[in-house]
Amino acid sequence: MADLDSELRQAVSESEANADGVVKDPIPEAAARGRTSIGLLIALLVGVGALLVLVFSSADDAAIYSVTVDKVVAEKESLAGRNLRVEGDLVKGTLRHRVEPCEYRFTMSRGGQELAVRYGECVIPDTFRDVPDMDVQVTAEGQLTSGGYLEATHIMAKCPSKYEMRQKQARGEAAPHADLLQPAAAGVPPLDTGAPR
Image (cartoon, rainbow, N blue to C red; front, side, top):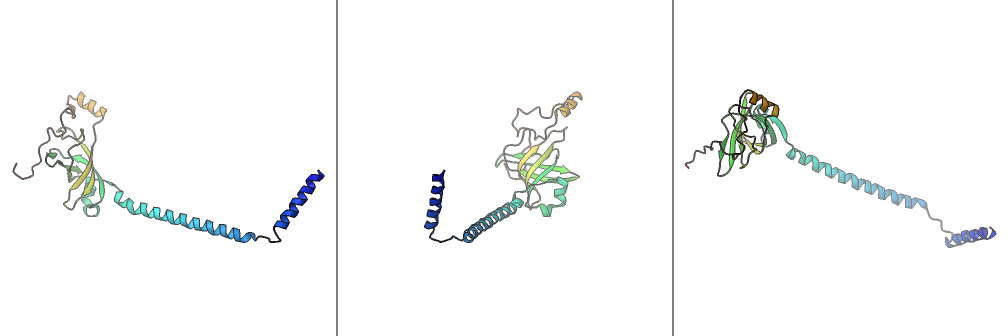
């Protein structure tokens, strides 16, 4: 044990001799660490702020306003050019199709108001049919143009439920979508463009 004590005393005296009497000031090291921490905090806050500005500035362009036909007609000026999801019912007899260039046109109604829709695609949902004895609920996404119609980019049609189908069958009515084996444009009248064919 005596050896251990003497070795410890010798190590302490060597350590003091190597320091040459110079005592380090602990405050500059702490201040340097504090400045580094503040700098990192400021950089982090600037990065988060920039990210928030980016998100909120692009959110208005990407937002889709879900409205019904009657609200679109009532607020045409304020909704023009915005991305809309419009809900309504297909007005019977208005679904038209043009082959070249591919386009579907129809009219939606809700609350006593009507809105013309143009859909510039060749494929429509199988459930989107102009069926005489059935109301077809339609949701169209797109932008309201200055011409007063909706330029749709996506169309969804609500398919009747199994319960509704059983009720129709019990009343002796035909299933509204029994002709699904036909192409979607079959039975859809051509679009009258006014140009000679």
